[in-house]
Amino acid sequence: MRIRPATPGELPALQDIERAAGTPFRDLGMADIADDEPPALDTLERYRRAGHCWVAADERDDRPLAYLIAAPVDGALHVEQVSVHPGAARRGVGRDLLAHAAARAREQGLTALTLTTFADVPWNAPYYARLGFRTLTEPELTPQLRRIRAEEAGHGLDRWPRVCMRADVPRTGGTRAGLTG
Image (tube, rainbow, N blue to C red):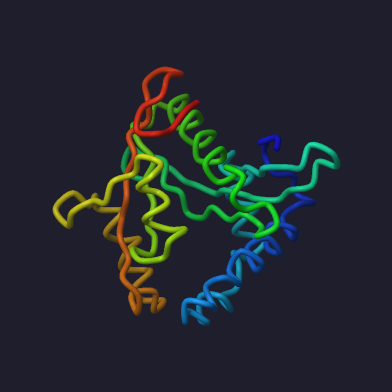
């Protein structure tokens, strides 16, 4: 896999990756999540133009198999979405995308990666915890993380337990909190 910025022509493929990555939620009784529409093309383009949309591409044909979008939020780089096509799952692709995002955050002077996720889905909060993310307590939530959580609740995502998580970004290229750059 090679991690690189997404190109404008790849944005529809990112939507396809998102749809495919959502399919396993159906087996957990989360059909609404499995059927949720991916980010709109104009939304993906905004992340891409801001320099916060990366793909993990197959080395043979340079085709995206996973992607990550993020935005600066309260001094951290907030991971809005990381999706891996099921055909590329369990190869460390998500971990590599997160490490890439951590390196970009460090370059931008940001101190951490944050994200919101489902608490009980094995490839969500438990996975991120293995990578060094920790669940934030309510008093630790920043103003913008509170806003993000309120928006998620407004979209019905709180039908299943959700958490905010954070991993500090290493100040140098070494490892810390499971993230490398």
